[in-house]
Image (tube, rainbow, N blue to C red):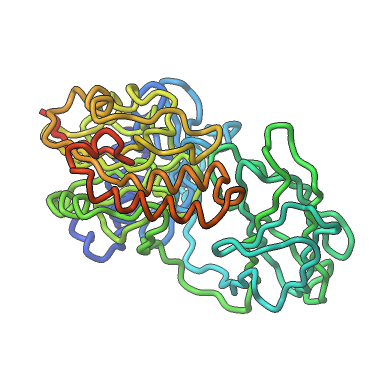
Length: 439
């Protein structure tokens, strides 16, 4: 790992004697910056810090000397190897670091008040309906709009996903943003900023779901998660990990294996999505730009030096990768000798991410993918009734068939669950798991 002179000399918080004063997020970043590698060459990186805050690097450029190009950036503490600015004048940045003008230091930040989509602030027209912590429209009723008043800067939060369409954002009738909210992989947040037409003067904001879409999108939907409006307050910047358990929860086996990782070690959660743990050993990597991941990167090109992690975990991700065997080789490469892996993937599951669900796997397929590891244990989970119920739902049979017949079938299959032994469940398991060791 190459360090620029300013970073290694000026960041006093990197001393191990001061580690107890840092948040778990800052400790993880400290460990990671010394273990990052170019995802293309696997060679060393130069970290060029731009902004420093809360005991960590808040903004930085990641430069590959071998490629002679920018390969990533740190943005609001998050390390991103997928979505970054490539046309950056690194020479000027390096000169400003040498001159002592960079990094700059930030201690305070704007405080924002969150308004969820069900807040009385918003006036809806059209076919909006609640879904989890958002509202969604299919644009079947026109006009499809959301209106509210602001007199301070505002951040509007959308959800972008494979079924999203086009949206205009207007302030006092003027189009400020024209958005294509299509996102090919999964639902991710998309934030846009607006401000009053005149400072401290009320202005009307309108979100207009247009009912049009890009050629790649499978729908015209708009997902709206509410907004945040600036207050008069500022507060000290905090860089913290906050417990988040959304999507797949952490398994008991995961917690047991994480407990065995030493305080100085690292655990990588591949495809952790919008999960997070307040733990100085835990690293969440995901391809989608959620807020929670520590690193945005590609599981097929892991941006780490070889032999980095004591423990690697992944669940519900492998079936969404285009080359599971390459993923297995990458997992092996970045696991330390003696390190452990706990990897789970879908077997008997219907498609659950259209266009991004490539491979389901048997126990034997998972063993083949991770064959470089010593296999310590394989196991499986699920039930016949869970599979049948999911199949009925995803084919819309539950909407089209006689509901009493559907219910009778499900009740019968649930009775059959009792007849399926664990050994026979292997042949229809919903998910399969492997625990292994790098030797």
